[in-house]
Length: 274
View 1 (cartoon, rainbow, N blue to C red):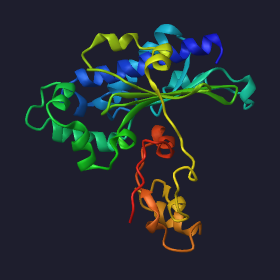
View 2 (view 1 turned 180 degrees about the vertical axis):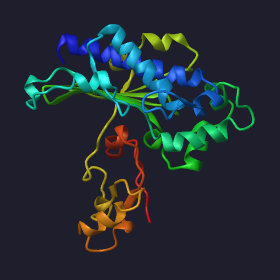
View 3 (view 1 turned 90 degrees about the horizontal axis):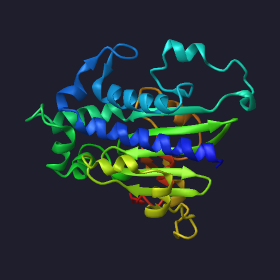
View 4 (view 1 turned 120 degrees about the horizontal axis):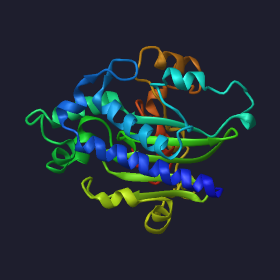
């Protein structure tokens, strides 16, 4: 990465950490309340992260082009008119709270007895990782909700930062490799000082082993991950004829998250049988 891109990566790391801390500081009531933001029907758990990320990026560069699902009219007016990626500005594609549909019932269950307690404290009071995996899928390291930003320059990805909101693990993807860094307690302000150099020095390299090294069988290599959670998706997939036999035999996850989906190919994934 070039120097300015390194700096932007630092800002994006700081933005997703700030979003995570803001969400942990919020109460169950605040995260589950509908608020007049974006499209007008946004849950607090979505708005809290987006407002934080947008604010931190704008504080560094008010002209930064941040793209989210809640793209406002100002951003639409600034949308690049030239289809040539080389002539487009530096762009940041962001999913402030991925897996909102799962995070909502998770927070509802978590805060049922004490809706005015901070989400972060409620998570510390129970085994949040186990609770997530019981309610949804394991391993939480890749199935958990995330805040993520991907930087694109001239049509090419410069870096991605992905923060797991349950495990507080930060994944940074650059041309130097894929690194995983574990954050501490949400209340520790030291996390605000974490940057790319911190991740390189204190994080660990995330490995993507090949099938041969893992001694996978032919059937193991047929396993796949795709979203089949809405009506029509499975029908369309079956009609693709990618599998001569029943595709469900090899389906590993049918409702994977978005930004961390590539991590299903990493050592974080556990091959399951049956």
